[in-house]
Every structure is written in C-alpha cells, then in structure tokens.
Length: 326
Image 1 (tube, rainbow, N blue to C red):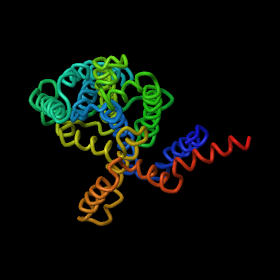
Image 2: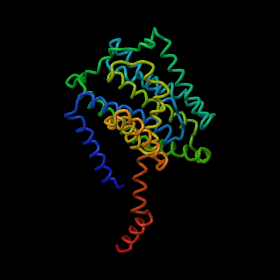
Image 3: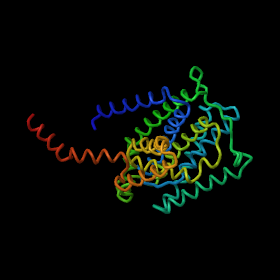
Image 4: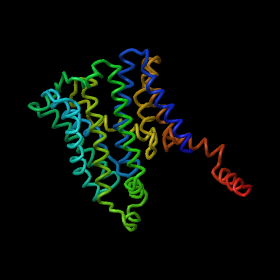
C-alpha cells in the first residue's frame, strides 16, 4: 500500500473513531472506550509476541501493576498525569526482570514462566489487603481533570482515551520502523542469524518485554478511572489469555492487528447479544473457524484477497512494463 493510500485509510479510521460514540448511550461509549484500552494492551503484547517472537501470558499482570499504582496514587491526591508515569516506570522495570527468563528458555517453557508470574501478581493483589484491598479491591478513583477539558462524563473520557491511544500508536509506529523494530523482527525470525549479524539479542529481548509491559501498564492506568473500581479478578490469567486472543485474531506481527482483534473480542459479543443465550456459542464458533482457515489473523484475509486478485508477480510485471515504455 502506498503512503498516500495508507494516510487516507488512517484518516478514515480516525474519523470513524471520532464519530462512533456520538448519539450513543453510556453503555456503548463504555464498550468503545474498553476497546481502545484493550487495543493499547494488545499493542504491547503484539510487540513482544508478534514482532519479537517472545510469548507472554502476563500482559494482564502489567495492566494490574499500572492500574493499582495509578489507583493508589490518585486516591492519595495525585493527579492522573503524575501517577500514570510512575506506574509505567514500575512496569518497565518489572518487564526487564521478567525478560531475563526469556534469555534462557523459549516457547512453551517461557509461556509457563510468564503464566506463573501472572498468577503470582494475582495472589499478591488478593492477599495483601493492607495495600490492595484484597478481594474487595479499590473504589472511587477520580477521572483526570485537565482544566478546560474535564473527563468526568463518558464521552469526554472516550475522547481522552482516543487521544492517548493515537499517541501510543504513533510511538509504537516509530519503534517498529526504527532499527529496534528491525532487530525485533530479526530476533523473531532467527535469533542465531540475528546475533551473527551483530544484533545484541540479549538487549533486544529485554527491551521487547519492557516496552510491551509499559503498554500493558498504560492500559491499566486507563482502566482505573474508566471503571473507578478494580479488584484482583479483573487481572487474572484469563484476561491475559483474552489479550493473547486479541493479538492472534487480529494478526500477530501486523501493526493494525491489535485494533481489529480487540474489536472482535470486545465488540463482537455485544453485537451478538440479540441471539440471547446463543451469542457465546456463535462467537466461539466464529473464532475457531477463523483460526482454522486464516491462522495469520483477520488482517491476513486482506492479504489473501490481494494475492488472489492482484498477484505480486503480475504487479511487478506491470511495473517493469511501465518502466520499459518510459
């Protein structure tokens, strides 16, 4: 896709995101805001898994760290804009530490390590009542007041979240297009070859976990003022698997995959509620069919359609023919 067409597509998508909540009720606005927040969490996991090839089942635990840090500080009187960076810094440090097992174990062994970490965070949140409130959780976190732009109501908070999502996407776009991004892809394809070409695979592996963890923490920092109530069950292993599903369904390793995957996992069940008790069965069947026939994710469907109707060799042939005519 050319730069001009890509710019037009992004502009159209942004316009749709701006117009989507207008005229909608509070619940629909809440669902759309949840889609944006989980898109951020999925972007982080997509960097770790899709670009760097390091599997992680702990993304919900970093959402928990970001959420509880932000909640505790804002309840103590801090502004959200001051509390959020503290949560992201803690996620970055913990992500670096969690990345060290990835230097020694790979594949399903690494998945078990990150799964154990998510379980550990969940148990700490549930048992350390003096800090986290235990099973009762924390309640009453305020939404950020930005002076002329207050986010106390649903629609303003949606646009605030949309702005944070756009900024996060732009930063990630810069990362994956930078030398770091090329190093992440080299690590995913062949770590031995990447190291032979001078890539510091140790540093890149740690950065993949650390940066992906920061995006999980940012999503948690946004969840806190959205629901204004958090408890350990909101960040269990099930939610890490849910975020993993978003990345796989959307298309791991594709930049826009997390947005599509989060849309399917968050929005599709709501669209199927008219089927009453059958919506979960239909939703699960659709996901299974998609994973069987399009393992590269929904974003890979466009690639299959493009390759079928506009084969690459035909496009190259047309370009060469045009060059000869000139």
